[in-house]
Image (tube, rainbow over all chains, first blue to last red):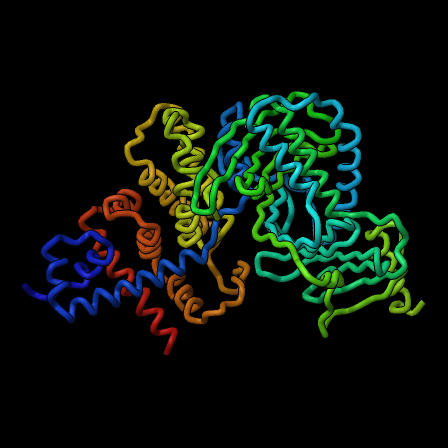
Length: 355
Length: 174
């Protein structure tokens, strides 16, 4: 039999060749070498395609929303997040503070209106997960991916170092898809220091303040309050769906609250649809997606845990590390981090303008 | 990214179009997105096309459409949408290097991969389409349906497309 043509070589690599052609490849050294070479080419192409990544978690969430929408959803753009509906820019800490204030209100004002959880097993799992959230101890390092509807640089990766025994002590940094740091904030009540980093035009600006007044605000605690609140709200819904998945990484519980669009959403926070993926080993939340209304603004958020570890031994530094190119400004402590950041920068601006 | 829905989660209720759509998204969402991203070169376009394809799938299932080869169906819808979008772009926005404001990809750790991608970008649309379909694991029959060509021609056209890509890649290395 004559040697294989280029098309036949391609067909062998693609698993589309006849028995006879494959048989020739086994016996002919030259053709085997050509097949191997084409396999390498196709595998390089495969690697190239893998580099295109995945659709964003927010996209998957929008599709789920559309699938369960009570009306027919058509067109590719109708499900895009509303422009400006909840746009968290780079100076996101101001929004974070506003959100935190809303969360505090939710925890104290909204939760009591829900009755006792039902006896569904999904509920028990959510309850165990809530317990895990609030009972953690020691210094914990978490890395998770967050996609917020309307956020300009979504999804971002958040790295959070938090001292569970002292919730006011933490360091949080957000990174873009390219691995570049966007913002960071650190606070340590023990040293009474707080620092914030904002990256503008490729330069990191770090504002540090000392002698911060107590009691100090804890952003991780507030974010946790939001998740706890959302889970409590999920528990209060009657139409939860529980799926148990047994995979190579162990058992996972997937709890869905199918999306609904209430006629009169709650003023402060309402969850229209949510999904929690919970580890079967330790009931830790691995993924949490929710859509709803926060302060009368539609929101969609997707949080996915990437890594998690407890740091043993001596406590690590909670300071934001500075690089040689970073601009470091020393400021005075204010009532909240957003004010500190703004006043320090404005004070620096004044001499620059020659006044 | 792990699948959001377990592939077997809906076997118990195969007639529910919503669940079936989400199951198919878990199974084919990423390959379809990579295919569209590869053909259009744009993440936003790719997401729009994938979304549109799955919404069409939902309506197809809701109206009792054929379920025999939904993977091929999805890729065919997406390939048509990619072609439409590329045509639209050519008609309204002829490519000019100085006007191309697409964001660059992150710095490559492997320069070869950047060259491989550059060689891929300059291929003719049909070459890109065929290579992208094959890279997502479609059979020749499925590729023929998605690309609108005869099944017997797939191997020949694909082999040539890969040759052209390789030639381009090697010329970057020189």
